[in-house]
Length: 71
Image 1: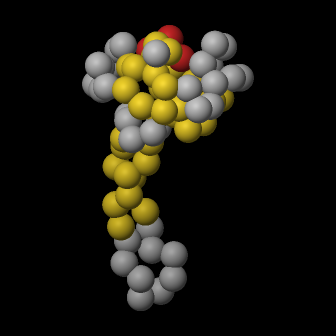
Image 2: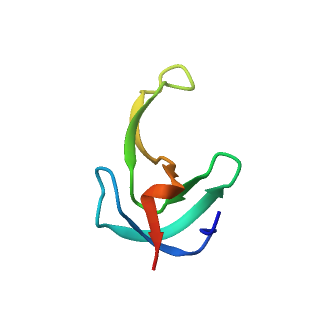
């Protein structure tokens, strides 16, 4: 895998095509990378304590390394 944590990349395929960012996390065994602020998924979170409300949080999901290009 030629992309590692801290590299600047541009996305070449998918819903965020053409956008760029910094690699936050590299997962070499899965051949995936997490790019800062891209490939965002809204995740519903259950309330942890009684009386607390549930919420919707945004999480950056991993992309396959073949869909990013180093710049």
